[in-house]
Image (cartoon, rainbow, N blue to C red; front, side, top):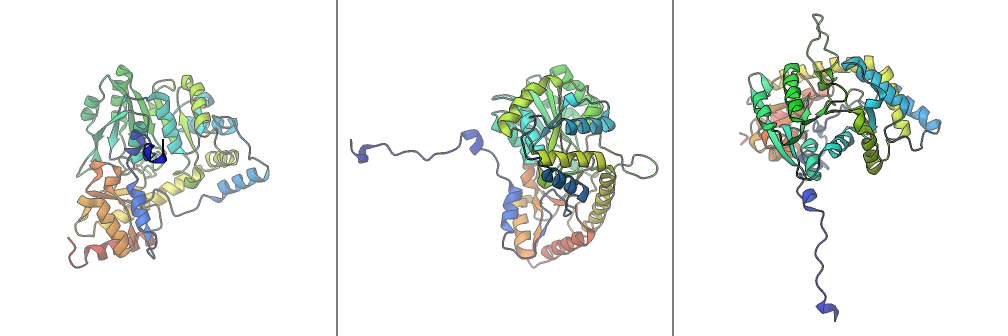
Length: 405
């Protein structure tokens, strides 16, 4: 047989479930900004401030001491114990045996899904939503159904009866992100109780992404000080129920680049979770875990001051955007974003690329968070107010250009 008779090899591709995943439109807009001078980037969910010095110093000390080796799959015991105390102080008694350390919050979400979801399973998610939560179950072969928040005079709201109707007995898992990225919506305690009771009856797992729980602006008392945390499923559920709570060091301690998170889950899952950690990342870096201990044990004052700063930035940006013709914006109770309507946002990806290209303003398209997000854009306000004002001026200039809608 000659070479001419050999079959032509097909182009190598990933499996269908992976090829069908959505690409990040946030990254697509950010990529469009490369090469554009003087871009103001509000597209990613992180502050423009560096991680606090006491956390960076802890990592430096750990590195100098040689903390560069593998650790236990579930994390070093001192960090797990510190997290158990931290979670217990916010949400009630929690033991070290219910806590696992992960290599970032998004890794925790993947691990949680791997624990309970397989091919053909049915998953329900409340949207608009950070795309990772919707796409992760699809990687595992699950089918994801979405229930949309509604937008009106009171901002973003959940129709809890609509959600309950979707949580049928054949549902394997519910994914809830509250405070929510991108909308800032926060699930009420009453709605959490109603949904938890429903999921108990039908044996449905709840995976709660509570990464933004500390970025919550409702007043705790008559002093006007923010509550320490948003309502959590951990306030209502026993630690050995079908509830997995995912969290991260990224937001409350400005540690986005450190890639450190944790899971609170039933003890019966921990042996299998350790196996999954082994086959995903083996363990979080030792010196990063030491920095995590410093964050948990020394960072409470920092976090409370951060929340006050973010609340002030939120209010400042809401006032500024409210002066822009055609913008419809409401102050959300949590997270670090405004998710608002504006002229041209019915094609939000194209709009956001034009904003970068024409005036150097970087915001995230609503369509990045699912079809229910189309018509809106997301603006991260975790920066100083002078930068926010500069961004608003660029938005006004864009909307005021000849031919603008």
